[in-house]
Length: 430
Image (tube, rainbow, N blue to C red; front, side, top):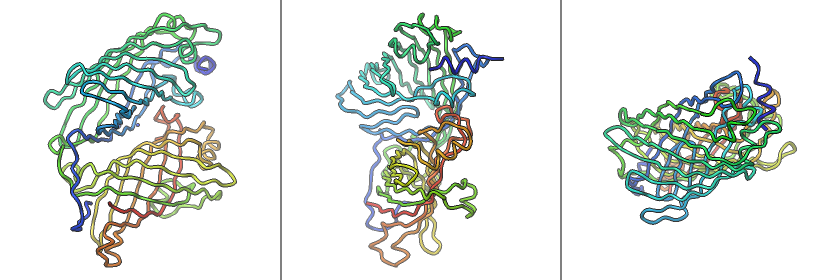
């Protein structure tokens, strides 16, 4: 798969104020965050380019059974004091020159199972069996640390990856190459530095030694592959973990219409109707995680969602899965209003017609995974009708936005564009 692509390139990421609100306690182990940064990786293939960069937006969330950690996530199926069995999903970067990444389909994801054994409070071992989307298998044995010292969190790792022949030939082999299975060795470290309040700096570095069979591939010209990452993030303020929140969870149901207009035109009120009349319904859940950011009163929620892209003459029904962190600011004028901003990731099981049409016009291969933004404005229904029993209900507008961040992200296929939907919603706290 990679050989033909490389031949082309070889030339020189408000609390409700009514009395009925119940107190929800965020446990100290429940963590959240949003972050972004740049990843720079060496290219092991025989190309004119020696490295490639990518911008990576990330979402973080962790509780007793779910952990979303930037570019990977897992659900815990079983655990005791020192052992966990997890269902795992992880993004895997394919480090090609930028000019070839869209044709290759961007980066990929692997799914599998993970057995985690805790050696101590600071060290654990992971044993993983992973498969890509076409059942090509690799497995990992990794020793990882999680060490806190002052404002620093240091996470060293060293690991051994076994690649099957099928996996090696697809991702590292040239045309006619016959590669065997083999073992790669990786060592690295990730760090997180607490600057102030909710602000953190993130960094990391990793070096991989490729196995001898891969080194003999006709399209590989390096025994090693390296990567570094530098970024920033907004996470829990350590001083507020375990704080009691006067907030409720919510459900939000919406219905809306696609528009070919960009975000700027929509915010200016100059959007156009979609000539193909694409429509979408969605349902989002909001789980309270914080009531301030940098000491400023904002209500923050971990907000996963599911959207239905309705069938029409141009497309079949499709599903969209969203993970996001959503923040609300409440103000009174003369009733309660809220401005909301959400950031996260969106994955569609089928490329929507509105996105396919734009990608065809621009000459891109579309990406199922894109960055997600939610901009909203709503009003409290109880205040509008002077009915305190309706104070838990909000009615509003939301822009449902998917985009690829202007060709800067390899995981989004190095494309420019996406889709926008204008939606109306009802949101109710419970």
